[in-house]
Image 1 (cartoon, rainbow, N blue to C red):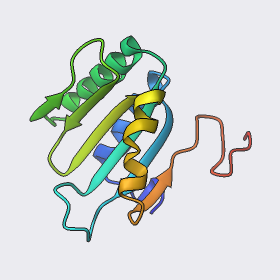
Image 2: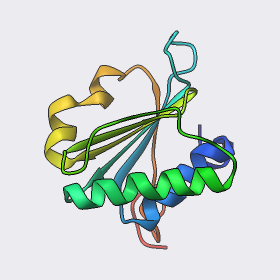
Image 3: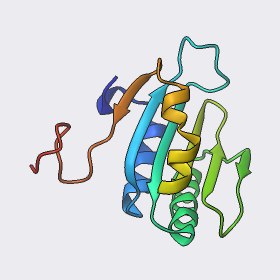
Image 4: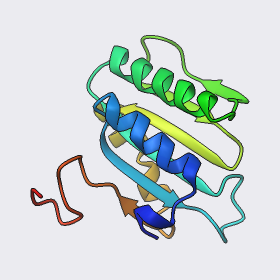
Amino acid sequence: MNLNSLPKSISAVIEAAQSKKATAITILSLAGFGAFAEYFMICSAESARQIEAIGEEIEAKLRQGGVRLPHREGRAGTEWLLLDYGNFVVHVFSEKARAFYDIERLWRAAQRLDVPEPGQTAAGTAL
C-alpha cells in the first residue's frame, strides 16, 4: 500500500486533515480481516478545537465530492472524533487519547501506511 494506491476518498481525507495541521496520519488497510471497514485513517490534533476543525474539513471536502457522512461520534470539546463513512472510518484523537486507545496496536496485523508530513519524504527527511 502506498499513497498512490489509495482510493480517492482516502486521499481527500488525508488532504483535508493535513490542511488543518493534523499530525501522525496513519492509514490501516483492514481488507481481508473481516472488518466492518476497508480502511481506518487515524490522526492526532493538539486541541479539542483542532479535532473539531479537522473533522469539519474532512466532512466538507468529501461532501464536495458527493460523499455524505452516515455516522459521527464525538462532541465538541472531546478528545476523540469518529467519522464513519461505511467502507472507511476516520479517527481524530488528541495525542493523549490516541496513546490510550492505541488502535494501531489493536490492528497491528493490518497493512499500515504512515503518511509523511507535508514537505517530508516517507523516510522523514525534508524534500
